[in-house]
Each structure stands twice: as structure tokens, then as C-alpha cells.
Image (cartoon, rainbow, N blue to C red; front, side, top):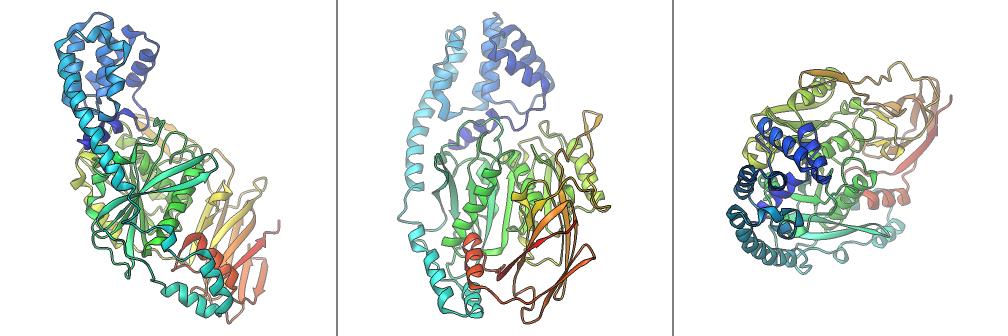
Length: 544
């Protein structure tokens, strides 16, 4: 029953409106111009037969009734009954004064009376599930984990080699009293916002063994005004996308909404990384087997991480998504760094049409992007309604393992909060400088409905870097970059020997480093990464 709630909630909050008929119908409906709204609804449903929600058909019925077309009103109410119910929003339909012309119709009674019964039942089920999600007695809580003070105290007692080994081999994790269940945590973003996120503890979890983890980003963010009540999620249709991995891997389910989601808000992206660190502090997670995926807006969010914050992940996946960064640059060359993005597009997707996705995909792969896109027969709800058709992606992801120390990194950013990839970070830009010849910012030609147009993927000036490590030498090339940081790990470089750094083939440095315990602990606490251990941070200024 709760699955129906989520499906219709998904449809209510359109992922990224692309159909002008539908948009126009909604605009005129809000203006109460029911004649024009009805015309657009009717034309839309002739051309677009899939993707209806009972909100759309309900509004079409209201519009038809207000202009006296009761035959069409009856048709749309019947369609609403067939589609199902958003059980959490019964009052929206029952108390809406605009539906007065519908209330005398027998079709309305056939729609609203079962709605009431099912909504009451769903409310009770929601209360039970919510209580289970908040049961702190069966999960691991922060008080059960090693505190920051524990690690700082160790740093004062142990040599650097001993401290690093302690972190590397650490597995003193507490086993939860229950497994194979969802639990709800909260994370404070700032003084006015605390956001929920769900964690699924797998049936096969062994606290002494490293376990893979998946972050799953839900769709329908663009118009969602509130976070979905967490109780709706465990049995939702969209969550079933992750069924294949639930037995043997953790899943983090962040919550997004219009003003805090994975399209425009940097704070929301960074909160997901904090949620990941939080879970890694409580459970024995395999740092090199962490993946992020999502559907629709969520798939676009996973694409954002691949292009802006890939360091924590082994691989990425998007289902029925638009491969573009919203409100920022879309630096496709950032997909050339070893990790792979896997995508699945529906052949009949009307929200993010295949020809549009393919135009970006073809352009990116022609420039060396590590991206594999697959096409399956279906519409925008492909991953939700036909999850068996996308399960192969999880088999591909499971084979991927993060290389925490890539020998070569090519990275570009216009936002310094996204300046880091693995062991190198851009910390200051000088975008007034001339770009290096290798620093190109080409934009693809997008195709939709048989038409072509070029969309600027680089609206903001950016800086770029190419860093190559060979033995104990680092060669760096920069473009429009003023400052950089190097995150040095003893698992990548031999600290018993000098480390040499060349910048733009002219500035050569020779550095003698000694592992710093304070740096080791601070960096570990920030990420809880037991694989990529940082012992030193080098800050360099690029000469003009």
C-alpha cells in the first residue's frame, strides 16, 4: 500500500519538466483558467499516454467539470481511480474546494470513498514503520563509536607508523542487535536545518568484515517542497531498485527537496558526504567499495558527484537521468580519471529523451570519458517499474574497486569547494589568466525532438590541473590556477626519500617530509577513510 503512495508522489513532483503541453496545463490550472487548462490537458494526454499521475488526471477532471464537459470529467476521475492513490495526501483531494462540481458524480464517490479507507490504513502503517525507524536500541549509535578524542590521544602516544597501522587495521566495531532493517539518523546542516537520512543494515553484515556501501539518491527533487516522511520509504517502489544489494551491502538513502537537493545546492551534496563519514564511523565499511547511484534527478545527482566529488567512490550510476550539472559548469573531462559512470536510459523516456542523453554521451566519450550508457525499452519509470532490467548495473558496480592513489589526475573546477580529486586539490583560481592550450571547454550539441542546439556547459570561468606521479616525483601542469594542495600518503610515496615536485616545467621543489600525526588524525576524522591515509599536506603557490 505504501508503495502506491511513493509512486504517485514520484509522479506528482515531475523530475524536470520538458513537455510544454503539460507545463501550460498546470500554469492555466493555477490561474483557474479552466478552459485553456482543459485544452492543454486533453492535448497532452493524446500525445503523452504514459507518465500520468492521479494529480494530473484529477486536475484535468476539475478543469473539465468547470467548463461543463462532464463526460471528460468522468473519464479523468476513472483514470485517477485506476492509477491509484497518494495515500499521504487524502485531504488534498477530499477538501479541495475546486472539486465541488465533481462531488455529485458517482465516479467521484467511487474514487474518494476507497481513498479514505486506504488513507486511514496507511496512516496507521506509517506510524508503526516510523516507530521502527526511530528505534535506537537495535542500531549502532554515535556513543558506541571511537570518539575523536580517542584518536587524538593515540596520536600522542604512538609513532606515525604505529598510528597509521592502527587506523589501517581498525575493526573494533560494535555489532547491531538486529540486521536486515532500515534505521533513521539525523544530521545537522546548520543552526536552522537538520535533515534525515536512512541507513539499511544488510542481512549479511559482520562487524569484523569490511562491507560495501551504496548511496542511493531518489528522484523528484526539483518541485518537492518538503522531505518525504521517512516512514514511506522502506516499502516504497523506488527503494526496491536497490533490492539486489540489500543483503550484502549498506545503503544510505538521503532525503532531498527543492531548496536542499542534488541539482543546485552545494550544501546538500556536502551533507551526503558527511552522512557517508558518519556511517563509516559506526559500521565496518569498505572504503574502496562505495558507490553512488540514483534515479532521474537522483541520477543527475550521481553524475554531479562523478564530475565534482569523486574521491570517496569506486563508481557511479544513473537511471533515466539527464547528464548535466545544473547551475554550474559541466566539466565532462573530469570523467577521464579512471572511475566509470554507468547509465541506463529508457528508449521512450519523455522527461529526459534518449536523443538528448545520447548527444551528450557521444560527445563525452569521443573526448575520452569513462562512461558507459545502456538503453533499455521503457519510459521514465523504467528503473522503478522494471527494476529487473537495470539489475545488471549493480553487477557492474560490484566489480569496481576504488584506486585511492591514481597516478594521473586531470581535474577542472570553477568552485573551490569541489577543487579536490584524490591527492590533489585546486585551492585558488586566477581566471584572468590565459588558458593553457590543453585546457579546452567545448560544449556538446544537444538534440531533442529532431532539433539541435548548443548549450553552454561552461557558463563560469574555471581552472584546471594535470598532476602525474612517478616514483617520488610529481609533475604538475596548471591552467588559471593560483594555489594547490597535495595530500601525501606513505602508501603512495616513500617518505624516507625526498619528494620532488615540478610545476609547469619550470618550478622544481625538493621536499623532505616526516609523517605528521596531527595531520593523520585530522584527515582520518574528516573522512573515516582507512584506505587513503594522509600523513602530510603540501600547499603550493603557482607562479605566474
